[in-house]
Length: 244
Length: 244
Image (cartoon, rainbow over all chains, first blue to last red; front, side, top):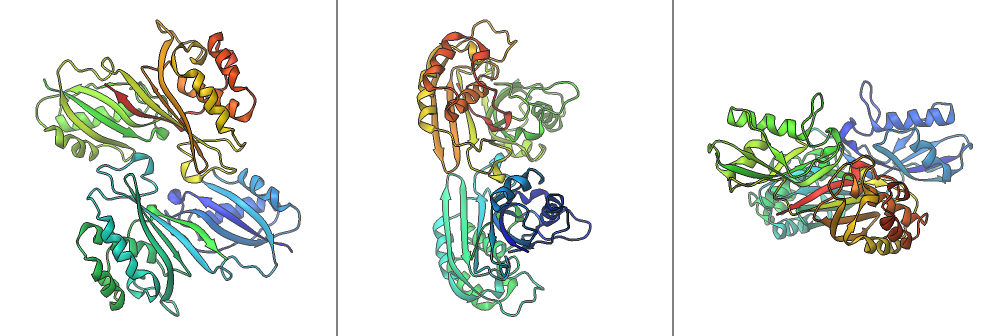
C-alpha cells in the first residue's frame, strides 16, 4: 500500500496530547477517526513526536499506509472537512513505502513563547507562559549559548525518564523579543522528555536573576534535575517542524 | 464618589458581547460581578463601546463610580483575581467625576485580521477570518484609500440601524501584510453598527477581484448596503484602543 506523510497543525489546549490512549481525547484519536471515515477502513498512524497535553504544533509529521484511493493533493481538504477546527492538515505527500515519520526524523524545531507583559495578552493566554516580572533578555541569551552544541542534557530531562542515552545535540537555541513576547527557538537532533520546558523554566529563572547565566553551564555539567529550574507550562510550547 | 477609568482586554470568543443583557454571559456581567465582590456593593459600569458577540478587545475602556476604598494601582491585580482568565484589566486610574467612558470618547481604533494562508493558522483561528483564496493586497490598499476621510458611511452600516447621522470620519485605514496575515487597522471618530466588519467584507471582495477598487468609491457614494460586500465574521475584529 502507498505510504503518505502529512503535516499537521493543532491547538493542543483541549487535547490530552498527540498520542492515542484509552479514555482520553487525543489528536491521534481524531486523526485516525477522520482517516477511517475517509478510507472506510481502520488506519493506524505514526507521529514523529509525542507532544504532551496542552502542547501545540504547527508542523507535526505523521505517516501512514493507506489504499491508493485519494491523490495526495486532495488529502488535506478531505481530512480537514472531517477534523475538529483545532486540528488542521497543512500538507500531504506520498513517500517511499519505507518512510517512518518517527524513525526517519533527523531533528525537530520547537518554539516556546513567554508573555513578559505587565498583564497577560489575553489573546495569547492559550499559547504563552505569562511572567509579569521583567526578564533580562541579555542574561537569558548568554545562558542559552552554553546549551548549544552536543551535551549530556540529563539535568533537563524529566525525573524518572528512561532512555539509552541522554546526549543530544542542540543545533541552535535563539532567544528573541518582540513587543511583550520572548521567544525561545530550539533546533536539535532530538529532545529528552520535557527538555524544552525544563530548559525554558531554567532560562526564565536566569531572566529573573535567580540563577546567573554561568550557573547554567554548571547545571548542565552537574547532570542533576534538581539543580535546574521549574518545568515551564505546556501552553507556551509548539512543535514547529520536524526535520528529515 | 470617585470615578475610575479602567482599560480592559478580553477574548470575546465565549461571550455574548460586552454589554449586559438578560440570560446571556457578557463581559460587563463578569466585570460588574467582580466589582461587586471587591467593593461589597453593586456597581454599574459604562463601556466606551458595545463590542458584539465574539469580538475581542485589547483596549476597551470602562468608567464607574465607587467608594474610595482601593488605590487605582491596586485595582488591576484585585479585579484580575476575580475575573475569568479571558478578561484582563490592564490599566486603571482615578479620573474627574464628570468622566464618561462613552460620552468623552473622541475616537476608536479597531483592527481586523484576515488569515490568508492556504490553510488556517490553527493558533489564530479564534482571532482571524480565514480566506484561502489569495487576496491582492495592492488592490485592497487602493480601495481603502477611498474610504479615508469624512464620508457618509451609510452603505457600510448594518441594515435596520437607526442613528441621527451616518457621517463619520475615518482618520486612517491601513492594510498591511505580515506572513500569512492581512491586517486592517481602522482609526476613526466613531463607527456605525458593523461598519468595520462590512468594510472588511467589501475589501476582501476587492482582494479576490470580485469588486474593482474604484467600485468601492461608487459603493460609498451609493449609500446602499446591498451594493457593499458581506459582513466579515466577528472573530477577526478587535477593539484596540479608545481615544480621549
